[in-house]
Image (cartoon, rainbow, N blue to C red; front, top):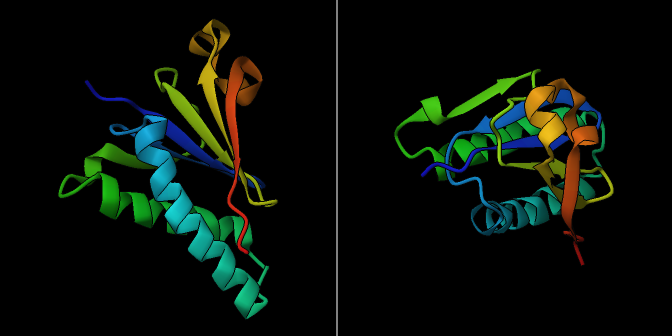
Length: 128
């Protein structure tokens, strides 16, 4: 059974849709490894311009290589929430990741986004 998810980036309207391996036990370890490196590189370079854009692009590439194997049809980028996703991951610019699950209202009206979801977890991937 495929577990679908969206990955959202604060201040970026784009939504990454992943059609399999979207459960927290699969997604969060990948995000942690990636985000620790991403935030460290941003801090080391002192570069903060275009962070939401860079973050979405790099998360898309990372999930393409780690989740899709040879079938990239399992990944798409768009502006509309999918009514069937089981998890939504929001990456904030304060280096936190929140995990959400849809409530019934989301299924009926996915354009409500996180307003129609319930937060189930919050993690901080701070570079030390």
